[in-house]
Length: 505
Image (cartoon, rainbow, N blue to C red; front, side, top):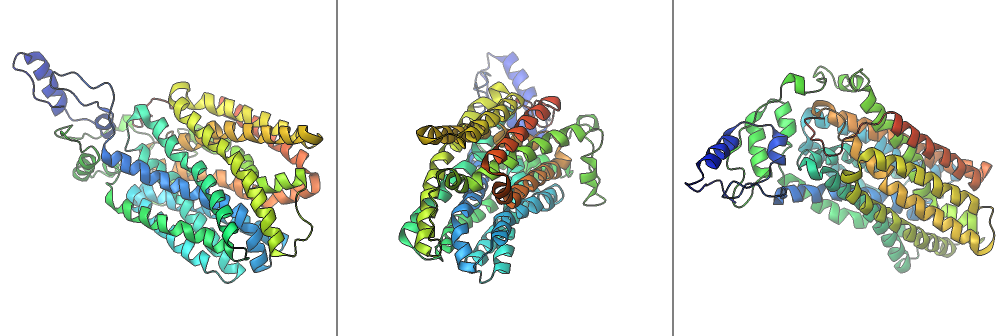
């Protein structure tokens, strides 16, 4: 590809040179398809090496989140033995990571609007490494809870920051596909977490085996931390900060190709009429107040409430799938005073959960192919309805007998995992990073993630209690209702973002 033209094609040449010399916005450069020698644009916008590097580093954060959160379901029974935990204390451990995500998403994610995407992108991974190291050697319940909270705190920052780092660096046409494929590594991480748990328990039959599960995460986390130093800052954010020279340099690194295209970069700032409500620089919380202004309230509600409702079911089913399987099939042993019996139950439940988690991955793959074609809103609404159908089938399985019970339960959970991963679990994450203006996008996405994780933490705390007092069938029917509510809420407050560039939005 080149900008050099044939002398006989003067009109094409003049038009092309004008096109290249004209100042444009960041997103216009990112969305531009390179041009061949005869002035013909390429049929698609090829990703550069730097854009793929950012995609990989953003994917890694979701991988660690899926691995750590879902691996806790395998590690928790051994933690209970190691620290002699009561039922209430086990609830604290299960919820501590989710509460950390809740706090980290708003507190650290919001800071990316003030200090930049890249700095927080690095800081969150550094915190994850430090807290994982402390978690592996924790010697008391207090230290354990603090470390689990710290791990969640770091992962919470990754929700808005990784999304923004990626979505602000890639072409609009493929944004849904690329962001969701990165998000899909959460499902890969969940499967990896279960697999690591099973592998370690097969080699180490002690109550301390859970420490090795988290220790394994440290090595790849360090590699990702190092990699995040070698990427450019978001040009969108730099332009918002009126740092045009730095934005042009960052965009040049981002779009570096061989041969070079575009040959030169000359950015222009967007007009005030093209921007959203500008977040005040006067105080950290001012931007959060603007989330509920008349201009942004619809986006805030759409990004937050459906995500909260889907997290009630996602983490309730995801973390406690072993408990659900044990409740229905009753394979939990009676000699729980022995570590060997606990590990045997743990391995059996983890294997069943790992099979079901495969449908999380299949759902994300479907979302990657459909999000830009069918639209975010349609997939989220259909996904919520599908979740309700899967949970209803699972609820009916509680009263069934024999082989039909097994078939109905697994069919319902498979349908739930697939539809949830294709629909609300993927789309809520995608939408939260798209519907807010750039100057408050970190705060908006962070608030939405925090509000959602309030639902996840609530589930981790009350799921065992509701299960004990109301039973599994009643619990699943409650989740059917919350899923249908999510579908109705999405339809009423819908904002379609598919195919629209972030500056236009």
